[in-house]
Image (tube, rainbow, N blue to C red):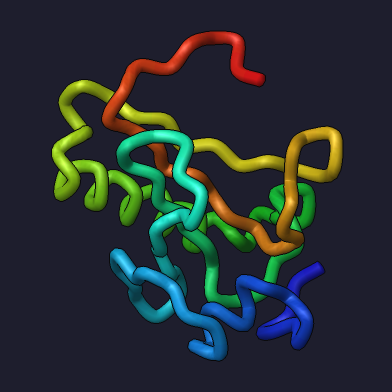
Length: 119
């Protein structure tokens, strides 16, 4: 699903500034905020301002948006001092994938080593 805004969506409400958040960076299409329950020393959520339910709802037309999200993530990683050592960017899709908010978002995590496989 893709819409400008879904009234009962937590992240749509954060984008609309109806709920508080610690904004790290934003542009006209993407908002980056600190995760309220960080799993790493650096844990930032990158989300489109337009409501997209999950990565399963992306299309070829969303390519520019995804480029902006990943470019912003790289810029934040450099600014947080985690780019050289490395970091992880991940999105969860659906219940079994661990998605808890039905608004596309990417977790940018760094500042410690991560194992594989995750979860």
